[in-house]
Image 1 (spheres, rainbow, N blue to C red):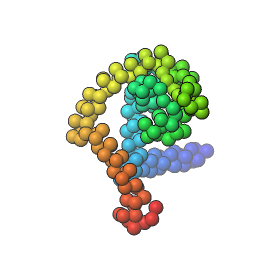
Image 2 (tube, rainbow, N blue to C red):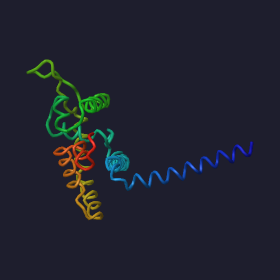
Image 3 (cartoon, rainbow, N blue to C red):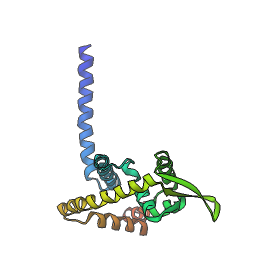
Image 4 (cartoon, rainbow, N blue to C red):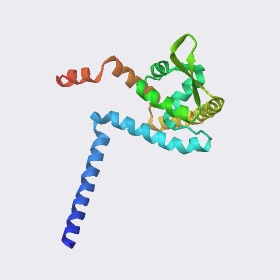
Length: 182
């Protein structure tokens, strides 16, 4: 029995070692740039969560762009939101469903097109939108400082990377650099 337990510990230690090597490889592998960008976004959202709570913001950080958009445009359809945020229709639909549950938005029939539903902030949603604007004013300088520490304009760099991938998609880049058809 002890031998089996020691063997399990050996496998576990080996797995830990391999995991550490794998993580180090991912952290420096250009092929996993998108993963690193997602890790950054997830870490920023995770760290913003407690700040949101302290500021009385009661919706998840992941819904911020949807709330901000509705705060700016008064009302919009799901398609308009998806287009404006450059997010998949299904993602925006899930966010709308959650914001409806939180009673931060309401859906009303478009008076000009009965097939469309327009979404707008409730009174509570507008109050939450104002809190989000206050967060933006506070968070902007913090992210600016992070950019300065890195010696690069992060928002500009990410925006330019997105623009370049739209201009020349990854499949074309793979083909150009390796000759492999994606």
